[in-house]
Amino acid sequence: MRQKKFMLPESEIPTHYFNMQAVMPNKPLPFLHPQTKAPLRPEDLYPIFCEECARQELNQTDVWIPIPEPVREQYAAYRCTPLVRAYELEAALGTPAHIYYKNESVSPAGSHKLNSAIAQAWYAKNQGITNLTTETGAGQWGGALSYATSKFGIDCAVYMVKVSYEQKPFRRSIMQAFGATVTPSPSMSTRAGKDILTRNPNDRGSLGCAISEAIELAMTTPNCKYALGSVMNHVCMHQSVIGLEAEKQMALAGEYPDTVIACFGGGSNFCGIALPFMRHNMDGTRNTRFIAAEPCSCPKLTRGKFEYDFGDEAGMTPLLPMYTLGHSFKPASIHAGGLRYHGAGVMLSQLMKDGYMEAMDIEQLDSFKAGVLFARTEGIIPAPESCHAIAATIKEAEKCKETGEPKTILFCLSGHGFVDMASYDKYFSGEMQNYHVSDEDLAGFIKSADELN
Ligand SMILES: *Cc1c(COP(=O)(O)O)cnc(C)c1O
Image (cartoon, rainbow, N blue to C red):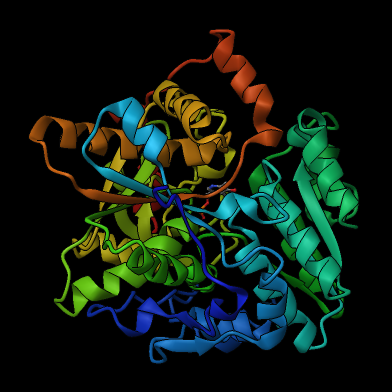
């Protein structure tokens, strides 16, 4: 029988995170204080983030950062995750390409986000922090952080955008099942929320407002810090466990990827699977292609601009050097909620600018078509975000069919879609549509970033 799954034992869970910042030839530009424009030091981030995360965020010297043993022990609940050869997808496409996927959907939270949530919860615990707070839109990050904090006895408060709180009750229940307190945002529990509700009692909330509420809680509550699920360098680095395992598993399969693909929201699952392989491009021993798959409706890498911008809509973060559509960008309400972010992580933006990777934009309908084919061939219903990686993989595999080249393609299956069946329902009923952003609209939004430079 041909081998389909390439598994590693728990003892092979990585012992160190890979820190690309220490390896890349052009380091990311500094984060800047929004008023003074002074470069930020790790200490400047201590009031908001736990100290170890703040140090990792700006660490440009240590290539390998040890993974604490309690974190590895929690990883053992689902790691090492399987690497799978998608034989049936290959057959359905009639492609000579060899397609592999790293299955991060097997985590208790259903996505890769738990890899960073566990690390952040442990670093907080180790520093004597008792409470973590965050915001969530679609609910995946909130679910992951709720689970991770419960493992280390930390209280977790999640501000969930009110419209999602009402429309996605199952995500809310998942967070509650893991013991988190979920508050619809805007709420009366913070000044930021109160201000908005006083002006409009029927406000349905936004991610910007939920971020403001979570940060305010962290800054005004003793022993409480804020945790983010994507974009930040330390989050992207925690995800390197994906690629480090995949590298060993590809060797078990006797192959090395010609192309590595992942969907792209803020960049964490992309960095996770891609950067451990990219280091071999940098030392000249390999020549792999890296493709970030983003939605056409939120095209920060394919059509955005590299410049300093705020990380959030409200303009509370430091200025970050990144590919951005402008912090005022309002993405269409596509079903892949995790990909609706206006910017790209700082480390990854520099790698993109320096030509180490490329990006591909994917139509919403193409993403679901790809997801359904994957479900029918490989037996896993993918998250709407992950469908973008699958659609990009199919495009590349179809090119191999034209050229006859048996390329090896590896993609990251970032999560499953069991809690997203309402989106599949829209697709099957024919109510789903594609969204495009016109050049004029885009130019208008990017102006909100131009003005800061
Ligand atoms: C959040 C999320 C993403 C997008 O975030 P990245 O940081 O870009 O990885 C992708 N897939 C799933 C399943 C997610 O939950």
